[in-house]
Length: 298
Ligand SMILES: [Zn+2]
Image 1 (tube, rainbow, N blue to C red):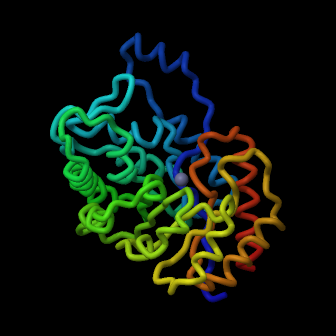
Image 2: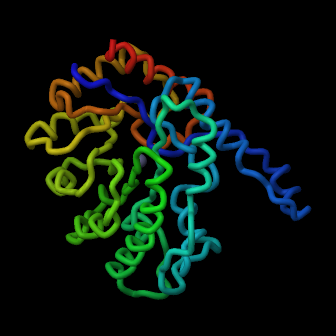
């Protein structure tokens, strides 16, 4: 193998959050710092040996992080769109800057962006009554965050799970608006069964594709029928199951992937964000993933 395979995460990571201390600082009106939770996530990823690290998306579920800070949205009992969507300043930038202070310069950062289509599908629209216009306004606003974000990260990962449910005919145009003038490396993560939309996915204007290849190993065979024009981030440990994959199991999964994708595989990662797993299990999965990566890289 010519190039070394890097180990990455998709985004979220479970941490122990002290709700009482957060509540006290809220009532005392002191500014509560979220940094200790980002620190926990980053520290686990570094200890596990991961090479491309995220902030762990510990603040909020992946939709709310963005909805909370975009103009035109609000969170009541649910995420709602109540006015024209506009960018209202940095959303995840400060967290990435903090991550940079925690990691050695041999490590890289992946900045996770929740995609406009998934945000649109996750909100109750009380303003637009036009899902396409709403999706494009979200893409425009998120593009401003990405232009800013690329100065602080090595890779931007766009999370669009809803593409596996239904990919709209404007999907590629939407990604083009989102990625306008973005120069840094980009990855599109679509979890779920993408076997019927592989040609659409391969046509997206991103550098790397990331899918749930461990939970859905049939995807490896499905990709065999196409010319692989993108680099691949191979999902190698499940995010929906507590059982810990052994290093041997992960290694043989990667070899199966290499048979089809060859040197297109540039990253290995969990299948999806690890937020729903117990922290100890999430850590051990990352540890075994990175041991398998080291073994393959020799
Ligand atoms: Zn996912």
